[in-house]
Image (cartoon, rainbow, N blue to C red; front, top):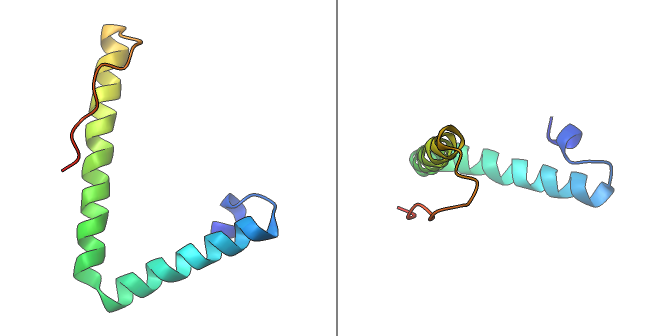
Length: 70
């Protein structure tokens, strides 16, 4: 799957494979830390999605302010 998303270059495929290997090692060796990272990423995605939806509904094309990183 990572190879399909990496584009056509060998270097891109190597980067994707290395990233996948690191992710698997993190999940296997430190499952609680991996879970915390996944939850933090999902929470940030939800905040950005809500902000973007609000902008689209109100017609505001200009970026108002960034959400604080928590």
